[in-house]
Amino acid sequence: MSPTHVIRAWRDPEYRSTLSGEQLAELPSNPAGLIELSDNDLASAGGLNSAAITVNPPCSQWTFHNIPRCCPV
Image 1: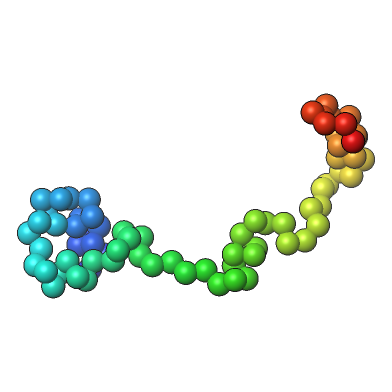
Image 2: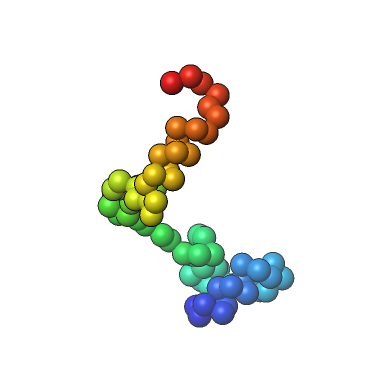
């Protein structure tokens, strides 16, 4: 089944009702298709696998030390 037909089948219930059982079986269970991520991809999804780097360390240190906090350090 072409991507155009898959999209139409997911968006248009009337069109989907005209499909045969064989065509319905070809539709993915999710309109985006099956997506699997490796363990490495999942680990890097957070974005901080290494130290965060700033362009102006003194400014970042000032902000860290002077921003109001809800809990005493």
